[in-house]
Length: 229
Image (cartoon, rainbow, N blue to C red):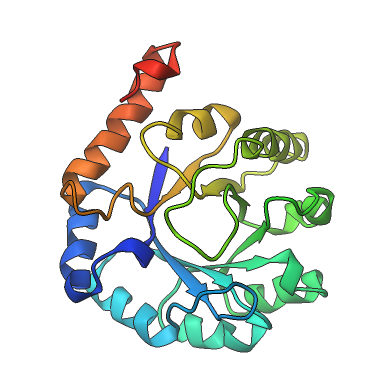
Protein backbone atom coordinates (compact mmCIF):
# COMPACT_ATOMS: atom_id res chain seq x y z
CA UNK A 1 0.00 0.00 0.00
CA UNK A 2 1.34 3.42 -0.93
CA UNK A 3 1.94 6.04 1.76
CA UNK A 4 1.38 9.77 1.30
CA UNK A 5 2.49 11.61 4.46
CA UNK A 6 0.75 14.91 5.14
CA UNK A 7 3.06 17.72 6.22
CA UNK A 8 0.18 19.21 8.23
CA UNK A 9 1.57 17.59 11.39
CA UNK A 10 5.25 18.02 10.50
CA UNK A 11 7.61 20.30 12.41
CA UNK A 12 7.76 23.29 10.07
CA UNK A 13 10.97 24.43 11.72
CA UNK A 14 12.57 21.24 10.38
CA UNK A 15 10.37 20.72 7.34
CA UNK A 16 13.17 20.17 4.82
CA UNK A 17 14.82 17.64 7.11
CA UNK A 18 11.58 15.77 7.75
CA UNK A 19 10.76 15.67 4.04
CA UNK A 20 14.16 14.17 3.31
CA UNK A 21 13.66 11.66 6.12
CA UNK A 22 10.29 10.63 4.68
CA UNK A 23 11.77 10.21 1.23
CA UNK A 24 14.65 8.13 2.59
CA UNK A 25 12.15 5.96 4.49
CA UNK A 26 10.49 5.03 1.19
CA UNK A 27 7.15 6.86 1.17
CA UNK A 28 5.48 7.35 -2.19
CA UNK A 29 3.95 10.85 -2.25
CA UNK A 30 3.94 14.03 -0.18
CA UNK A 31 0.47 15.25 0.74
CA UNK A 32 -0.29 18.96 1.11
CA UNK A 33 -3.42 19.92 3.05
CA UNK A 34 -4.56 23.31 1.77
CA UNK A 35 -7.17 25.00 4.00
CA UNK A 36 -8.69 28.46 3.62
CA UNK A 37 -10.61 29.10 6.85
CA UNK A 38 -13.83 29.22 4.79
CA UNK A 39 -14.67 25.79 3.40
CA UNK A 40 -12.99 24.34 6.50
CA UNK A 41 -12.33 26.14 9.81
CA UNK A 42 -8.53 26.10 9.75
CA UNK A 43 -5.98 27.94 7.59
CA UNK A 44 -2.76 26.23 6.56
CA UNK A 45 -0.63 27.40 3.62
CA UNK A 46 -0.64 28.00 -0.10
CA UNK A 47 1.46 27.72 -3.27
CA UNK A 48 4.58 29.33 -1.76
CA UNK A 49 4.96 26.59 0.83
CA UNK A 50 4.12 23.99 -1.83
CA UNK A 51 7.01 25.34 -3.92
CA UNK A 52 9.32 25.15 -0.89
CA UNK A 53 8.31 21.53 -0.33
CA UNK A 54 9.03 20.79 -3.97
CA UNK A 55 12.60 22.07 -3.54
CA UNK A 56 13.27 19.65 -0.67
CA UNK A 57 12.02 16.38 -2.16
CA UNK A 58 12.13 14.45 -5.40
CA UNK A 59 8.84 12.74 -4.54
CA UNK A 60 5.66 13.77 -6.37
CA UNK A 61 3.39 16.12 -4.41
CA UNK A 62 -0.39 16.14 -4.25
CA UNK A 63 -2.44 19.03 -2.91
CA UNK A 64 -5.80 18.44 -1.26
CA UNK A 65 -7.68 21.70 -1.82
CA UNK A 66 -10.05 22.18 1.11
CA UNK A 67 -10.87 25.65 -0.17
CA UNK A 68 -13.68 27.57 -1.79
CA UNK A 69 -13.30 28.39 -5.50
CA UNK A 70 -10.31 26.04 -5.92
CA UNK A 71 -10.05 26.76 -9.66
CA UNK A 72 -8.61 30.19 -8.85
CA UNK A 73 -5.41 28.52 -7.65
CA UNK A 74 -4.86 25.67 -10.11
CA UNK A 75 -2.19 27.47 -12.11
CA UNK A 76 -0.35 28.64 -8.98
CA UNK A 77 -0.09 25.10 -7.64
CA UNK A 78 0.96 23.85 -11.06
CA UNK A 79 3.76 26.44 -11.08
CA UNK A 80 4.72 25.36 -7.55
CA UNK A 81 5.45 21.88 -8.88
CA UNK A 82 2.43 19.96 -7.60
CA UNK A 83 1.66 16.88 -9.71
CA UNK A 84 -1.89 16.13 -8.57
CA UNK A 85 -4.69 18.34 -7.33
CA UNK A 86 -7.61 16.92 -5.35
CA UNK A 87 -10.84 18.94 -5.29
CA UNK A 88 -13.98 18.59 -3.21
CA UNK A 89 -17.18 17.98 -5.14
CA UNK A 90 -18.91 20.26 -2.62
CA UNK A 91 -16.88 23.23 -3.92
CA UNK A 92 -17.12 22.40 -7.63
CA UNK A 93 -20.68 22.87 -8.94
CA UNK A 94 -19.40 22.47 -12.51
CA UNK A 95 -17.23 19.42 -11.91
CA UNK A 96 -16.85 18.43 -15.56
CA UNK A 97 -15.41 21.84 -16.38
CA UNK A 98 -13.16 21.68 -13.32
CA UNK A 99 -11.76 18.31 -14.41
CA UNK A 100 -11.15 19.63 -17.92
CA UNK A 101 -9.36 22.67 -16.54
CA UNK A 102 -6.99 20.41 -14.59
CA UNK A 103 -6.41 18.25 -17.66
CA UNK A 104 -5.51 21.30 -19.72
CA UNK A 105 -2.84 22.10 -17.13
CA UNK A 106 -1.47 18.57 -17.49
CA UNK A 107 -2.22 17.80 -13.84
CA UNK A 108 -3.43 14.52 -12.39
CA UNK A 109 -7.03 14.84 -11.24
CA UNK A 110 -8.29 13.77 -7.84
CA UNK A 111 -11.79 14.18 -6.43
CA UNK A 112 -13.00 13.86 -2.87
CA UNK A 113 -16.06 14.42 -0.72
CA UNK A 114 -16.96 14.89 2.93
CA UNK A 115 -17.79 11.82 5.07
CA UNK A 116 -21.58 12.14 4.73
CA UNK A 117 -21.76 13.46 1.16
CA UNK A 118 -23.49 10.74 -0.92
CA UNK A 119 -21.17 8.67 -3.09
CA UNK A 120 -23.61 9.16 -5.97
CA UNK A 121 -22.20 12.69 -6.30
CA UNK A 122 -18.95 11.30 -7.73
CA UNK A 123 -20.17 8.22 -9.64
CA UNK A 124 -20.42 9.77 -13.10
CA UNK A 125 -17.04 11.49 -12.71
CA UNK A 126 -15.14 8.27 -11.95
CA UNK A 127 -14.15 7.52 -15.58
CA UNK A 128 -12.56 10.99 -15.79
CA UNK A 129 -10.24 11.01 -12.79
CA UNK A 130 -6.90 9.57 -11.67
CA UNK A 131 -7.73 9.32 -7.97
CA UNK A 132 -10.66 9.21 -5.57
CA UNK A 133 -10.03 10.29 -1.99
CA UNK A 134 -12.33 9.06 0.75
CA UNK A 135 -12.32 11.34 3.77
CA UNK A 136 -12.44 9.18 6.89
CA UNK A 137 -12.64 12.23 9.17
CA UNK A 138 -14.25 15.64 8.77
CA UNK A 139 -11.84 17.80 6.76
CA UNK A 140 -10.07 20.67 8.46
CA UNK A 141 -8.40 19.20 11.54
CA UNK A 142 -5.54 16.77 12.12
CA UNK A 143 -5.40 14.05 14.75
CA UNK A 144 -9.04 12.95 14.47
CA UNK A 145 -10.19 9.38 14.98
CA UNK A 146 -11.14 7.24 12.02
CA UNK A 147 -14.90 7.27 11.29
CA UNK A 148 -15.95 3.58 11.18
CA UNK A 149 -18.54 4.02 8.40
CA UNK A 150 -15.67 5.06 6.12
CA UNK A 151 -14.77 1.41 5.59
CA UNK A 152 -18.01 0.63 3.80
CA UNK A 153 -17.61 3.79 1.71
CA UNK A 154 -14.12 2.70 0.65
CA UNK A 155 -15.45 -0.73 -0.31
CA UNK A 156 -18.36 0.82 -2.23
CA UNK A 157 -16.05 3.07 -4.26
CA UNK A 158 -13.74 0.11 -4.87
CA UNK A 159 -16.68 -1.74 -6.42
CA UNK A 160 -17.64 1.32 -8.47
CA UNK A 161 -14.12 1.66 -9.86
CA UNK A 162 -13.80 -2.05 -10.60
CA UNK A 163 -17.18 -2.08 -12.34
CA UNK A 164 -15.99 0.44 -14.93
CA UNK A 165 -12.51 -1.01 -15.20
CA UNK A 166 -10.88 2.11 -13.79
CA UNK A 167 -7.22 2.12 -12.78
CA UNK A 168 -7.72 5.22 -10.60
CA UNK A 169 -6.06 5.17 -7.21
CA UNK A 170 -8.33 4.93 -4.16
CA UNK A 171 -6.91 7.05 -1.34
CA UNK A 172 -8.05 7.40 2.28
CA UNK A 173 -7.37 10.37 4.54
CA UNK A 174 -8.03 10.64 8.26
CA UNK A 175 -7.18 8.62 11.33
CA UNK A 176 -4.89 6.21 9.48
CA UNK A 177 -2.34 4.56 11.77
CA UNK A 178 -0.98 1.10 12.57
CA UNK A 179 -4.39 0.09 13.96
CA UNK A 180 -6.51 1.17 10.96
CA UNK A 181 -4.26 0.81 7.92
CA UNK A 182 -5.13 -2.85 7.36
CA UNK A 183 -8.85 -2.11 7.52
CA UNK A 184 -8.67 0.47 4.75
CA UNK A 185 -6.32 -1.67 2.66
CA UNK A 186 -8.62 -4.67 2.92
CA UNK A 187 -11.57 -2.48 1.91
CA UNK A 188 -9.77 -1.67 -1.34
CA UNK A 189 -7.72 1.48 -0.75
CA UNK A 190 -4.39 1.77 -2.56
CA UNK A 191 -2.98 4.92 -0.88
CA UNK A 192 -3.09 6.00 2.76
CA UNK A 193 -2.65 9.62 3.75
CA UNK A 194 -0.83 9.61 7.08
CA UNK A 195 -0.14 12.62 9.28
CA UNK A 196 0.68 12.16 12.94
CA UNK A 197 1.35 8.47 12.28
CA UNK A 198 4.54 9.63 10.50
CA UNK A 199 5.31 13.11 11.85
CA UNK A 200 5.17 12.90 15.64
CA UNK A 201 7.26 13.50 18.76
CA UNK A 202 7.43 9.86 19.86
CA UNK A 203 9.23 8.20 16.96
CA UNK A 204 11.50 9.25 14.14
CA UNK A 205 10.02 9.52 10.66
CA UNK A 206 11.85 6.36 9.61
CA UNK A 207 10.60 4.41 12.65
CA UNK A 208 7.03 5.57 12.05
CA UNK A 209 7.10 4.62 8.38
CA UNK A 210 8.62 1.23 9.21
CA UNK A 211 5.86 0.53 11.73
CA UNK A 212 3.19 1.38 9.15
CA UNK A 213 4.85 -0.88 6.59
CA UNK A 214 5.11 -3.66 9.17
CA UNK A 215 1.43 -3.28 10.05
CA UNK A 216 0.51 -3.53 6.38
CA UNK A 217 2.59 -6.68 6.00
CA UNK A 218 0.98 -8.08 9.13
CA UNK A 219 -2.47 -7.84 7.62
CA UNK A 220 -1.26 -10.00 4.73
CA UNK A 221 -0.46 -12.80 7.14
CA UNK A 222 -2.68 -12.37 10.21
CA UNK A 223 -6.42 -12.77 10.33
CA UNK A 224 -6.88 -10.96 13.64
CA UNK A 225 -6.55 -7.17 13.58
CA UNK A 226 -5.87 -7.08 17.30
CA UNK A 227 -2.50 -8.71 16.65
CA UNK A 228 -1.39 -5.51 14.87
CA UNK A 229 0.30 -3.16 17.34
